[in-house]
Length: 250
Length: 173
Image (tube, rainbow over all chains, first blue to last red; front, side, top):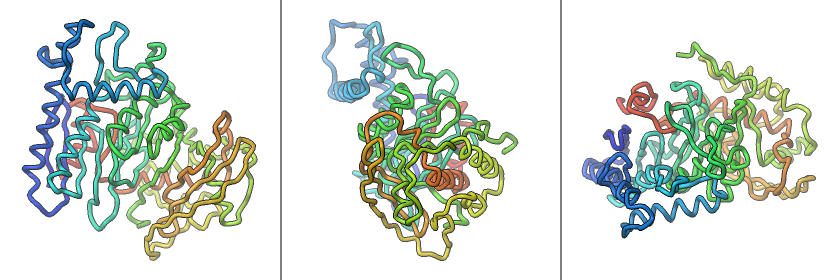
């Protein structure tokens, strides 16, 4: 059973394989995503982020969600020596590097707490997989080639995990190395597999900002596996990477 | 749709940061060469060939199977084999960069994961590309490219980008 909605301007899909009516659970999951958008969108003048930025350092009382997102971002910032950042040089909040993965992870929790076991949530390329698509096998998660949208760099076999990819190949997207403010260019694609999507998403961004030295670093920082491509098209890997097999080899 | 082959095939190198498969190979008694390879270029070149074929239509795993070199029994998995998953943890071995220990995960006879149990800190690890380990990982990566996919992870796209994406095709199934 598949569900598709656009949230944060991004099409997001939920694919449930349980033999159950998943519509109510999917609706709750999408609601979580919409709520996160309302609270954290920089494009909404009434969002908590926009109001906080308008108020400046004098500060407002932040919501629990806001403090949670900031805590995640601060932890990643500290662990990465400042390469990952959630504050711009002018002091305003830039929480986008945390919010999408965090919100999608929460949406997936909504599916789990509804009793669903076999599902895949894809929030614009950030993926949560649980259980099995069929026959007990793991989910096959394709990693988009950084050069060609319809080709795969590799296909990973994973489950009960979050998978996030950072890249600079989508128009207008870039990641800044918070240590010096420069645009990170030494890697062109970074995929992180972790137990939860919040971790995977933050680490993928952090590795992208750190460059090749971030690949083994991410394993110590909580990733299960990292697969990256550098600017010379060399592939780097660390940790546990289980690859899917073509049908003929199964 | 495959009119463009992988732009970077020539450098399509798996740099196994952990040098891991050395231990795996040792388990098979195949070799102990922890000595650095002169041949990241060689390996890259052979991968390039495999990569091209992998990216274009008929990526038979047996073809890349092992790429000439790889002496590992894992390369030629027989489909009939029960696809049981098991893991083997190698003993820690000393390299000039420090102790290395990895865990290999097999599905049937195929290595499906290389997991670091212990790795040295320090520089130069990525120069330590084991010539024999490399093809195994390359083969895994390349043959995986033609696996069926349930979903796609990628950098966040716009709605426009989504329309062209494989994920949008999957969502329409």
